[in-house]
Amino acid sequence: MKFKHGMLGILCIMVAGLLQVSAASAETTLQRIVRTSEVRIGYANENPFAYTTPDGVVTGESPEIARKVFARLGVKKVDAVLTEWGALIPGLRAGRFDVIAAGMYVTPGRCKQVAFADPQYQIADTLLVLKGNPKGLKSYADIARQANVKLAVMAGTAELGYARKAGIKDGQILQVPDTTAQLQAVRTRRADAAVGTALTMKSLAAKGGAQLEALDDFIDDPKHTGYGALAFRPEDADLRDAVNEVLHAWLGTDDHLKTVAPFGFDKSNLSAKKSGELCGG
Image 1 (cartoon, rainbow, N blue to C red):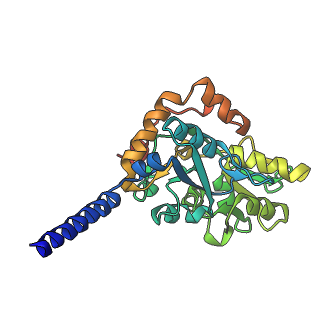
Image 2: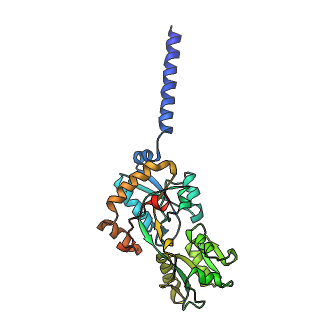
């Protein structure tokens, strides 16, 4: 009888342990973030959306928004993981971080891989060129018409698709890992132009000095207006929804506009779009 009672006790302990393991394995990302008060964001160096300052601080429009949003969810610690742009979605899906906070555009293709929050900004693109725009480039079509013109595009961005759709051949496209490489490509004349958001290209022009400029009269399809948002794993829809609830109440407030103003954003960048309509849903 003592043996049976002993075995029963051991079985109870084993079952309790299995239940604890099962409960732990069932914990959602949102529950873990709330429990630990810590979230990991993935970002790529692209000023002003997300970047590392010379003294090692991770900042930019998207990380600062992530900090404010998660603080409102009770999260005290935001860890940042630097990743090349093209590896952001694979890194998210592999669990290297919980959220992409890099100003990533919502596109139908990306919507098949991640769950986007609603957009936190809208913005148009432009070209970075040598001062005076010696090749007379005002549009993707201008580049497509000149077979000897090369365009520096950050790998994995929406602009790569836009360029190809406009008829720019792959031999004319120089794919680079980040905006610093775009700047260097134009500065050293490995490329005649670089393309990206107007804010990014203006920032690069300022870094490049008197020899570079960002076009004010770039002609682009209005459908190419970019809508940037935080991105989550598809299975983390509850986390996305919690973030959306905070965003809807906060975007456009004085605190939000004050948060993004240092990065060149203002009321003109606010958007009423929802990720569902941008995803084609």
